[in-house]
Image 1 (cartoon, helix red, strand yellow):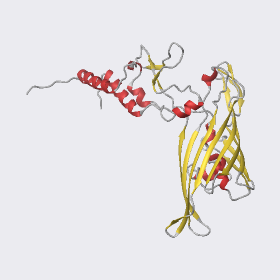
Image 2 (spheres, one colour; image 1 turned 135 degrees about the vertical axis):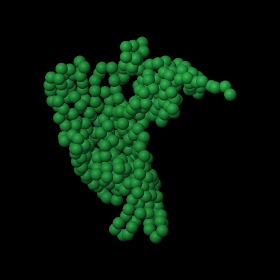
Image 3 (tube, rainbow, N blue to C red; image 1 turned 180 degrees about the vertical axis):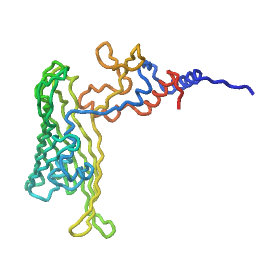
Image 4 (cartoon, helix red, strand yellow; image 1 turned 180 degrees about the horizontal axis):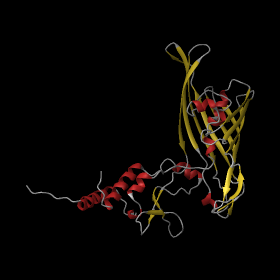
Length: 352
C-alpha cells in the first residue's frame, strides 16, 4: 500500500481551492483582513436618540418591555397608540420617573408625562412628553484640560389620535418632535455643534377578539402592530452634510396578548412582543494591513475617501431605502463562516 503524505501547505492549498469554488469572492483582496478579526468583531447597530426605545413606565418594563397588545392604559402612546381607542375611561393622566442605570451612573434619569381624552364618538386624543437627562458631563480638550461642563438632555413631544374602524379593530398614529442637545454648542474636532432635531410619526393598529371560552373561564385575545419613529435622519453638525447624519430608531413592534378572567375581580394576562429595527445594519469594512506588523491598521478608504465595504451594503441611504433594506442588508453569518475559512486557508491555517 502506498503511503499518502499530506503536509500543511498542501492541505491549505486544497482547502483554498475547494472553498474558492463554493465562495465566489474573486473581487475582494482577502489579504486585507484576518480571520481572527472577523471572528472577534461585533457588528452593533447604532442610531441617534436611542432613548426613544426606553420603556417609560414600570408596568411594561416589569413585563420585559412588552406592551403592544396589552390592555389600554395612560402610557399606550409609547407602545401602540391605537390601543387608546379601546379605553373605557373618559380621560387619564400619568407621570413616571425612572432613575435609569442608577447602579452604574447616579444622575441619569427619564421622566414621562402622558395623557388622553376620549371624545363622544370613537376617537381618542393623546399627548406625551418624555425628558431624558444624561447627567453632568465635563468636556476636555486633547490635552485633558477642562473646557466646560454641560448637562446633555433629550426630549420628545408626541400628539396621538386613535379611532375604532370596527367593533374589534382600531387604528392610530402619532406625530413626534424630537430634540437632542448633547454638546451645548461646544466645538468638537474644530467644528461647531448644535442640537439635533427632527420629526417622526407612528403608525399602529390593534385587533381584539370577542370573548372566548377556555375551559370554564372567559378570555380575550389581541394582536397589535406599531411602526414607530418613522422620520428624518438627525445631525449634530453641518460638517459632512447628509453623510454626517444618523438614522433615528425606526422600530417595528408586533405583539400579542391573552387575558383570562380568573374571577369577577381578577384576571391573568400573557403578553409577548417582537421587535425589529428598521435601520441599515453596518457592513464589514476592509482593513488596511500594517506593512511592519502585518496586522490590521484601520479601515481602508478608496480614492473618494469612502471606506471600502468587504461584506454588506452601504449604510448611507435614504429613510425609505433604509427601512426596506433593513430586512436583507445584514452581512450573512454563513458568508462570515465561509469567508473566515477561506482566509484561514490563504494564511496556511489548519481548518477545523
